[in-house]
Image 1 (cartoon, chains in turn yellow, orange):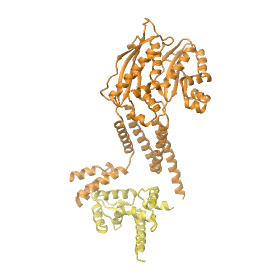
Image 2: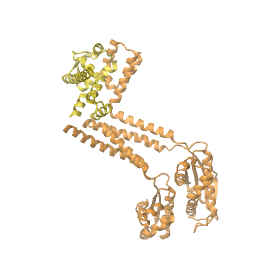
Image 3: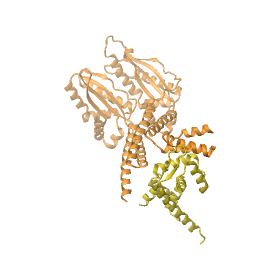
Image 4: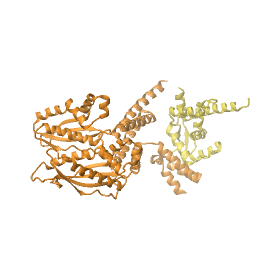
Length: 137
Length: 431
């Protein structure tokens, strides 16, 4: 069941076998390898940033780029941004919300909102764990 | 910069460009473009090309890999130089109107080759000419001699119509250095001439003159690399591309793990290739006979393949000496009769019955010699037997077909991988 959950959480085509290999390779016992793997994979994927930006409402590419730079301090390049947009649209987590084909706005779908909530909860758990363990005894 | 951006955008898959190209342009108009953005576009385009696999890309990729492997193979091959001498064997006393002169001379040439290319003769040539120095340091001399016989020396018959008086043939030797090839060819020619003088006239063959029409040449250009493996490797790439492309298409529809199937396929191929390379080479020499008397030929076949006859031939030709020592003559006789000798009946174009006699052995010269022996036994036992095709000298091994075994291993791996993927997935769903 854990593998299925991991596969669903990663949601970006990572096979459970690959995830298990990563767990083995990390071999960290203080924070569970499962949490670390999930955290690392989430942070390395810009799709989370795009989802977080669209959680506020519909935005087109340039608006997303500006918003992400404002709240995350990261400037996504045009290739990275549109690569993430196309992957998210393919998975049904966002949808094109307008007909203008040059500055087309995008919106979060129900599945996308649920996915974002799961990711944020997982990330929150990792952050809380790290904070608690960093607290001086 | 605009040109670079345009080039980078062109790297994306066409379908992706059609969907997002105009939006991407608008974004770059609004946000401006830096050198880092060009790299970002190019990198993402590459990732997209690599991750958005398609049937055509898989086929093209494998074909390209096959062509590249063929190129690497061709470049890694040591270029060999081939020296050639042309010789003629003819009866010492010309007998006008003798129709069997060429057959008799061919028979005599076989006898000459038997001794001139024997292990002891080749060992002398190898030592005298200092051939295969490196190989001799790494491998047993017996193995080097076998390789020399199987790979370096070729004796080819020339079109009989060009030499009505006897048998015209070429002696060829290939070596890494031109002078080495020439010296070895000369030595083999000398050994054949020496044997012709030393050998007693064979029964029915009479004394013969051997002439060197063209002395051993000094090659100036390396011999052309055999193109067959190059074509085979490129073809293998195409075939694998088609197979994996189809597999990818099927797994995509059935939601299976392509990684697992691919890993099994690679493992299967590795095992297949390893097994194929552990197998010894086997050469097959074949002759075609025609006999007027069918029942007599059938009886002769039974006699030739009888225990006593096969055992006598094994002793005479010194076949499978190690096995005779370890397993006994009876087992080796069975092996030779069941796996080595093959006699088949074929219908000729003229509606007559002919017999193909073949023999399989790890040494190509021995294979030819034994086939010659078998042919001699048949012709000796059945009157009016005509040899349509003399025992051939096999050039390349008939077994193992390493390419075929490697492909078979891959196919089995794919099947196992598909099964593992299917059952593995089922188990996760159940859990």
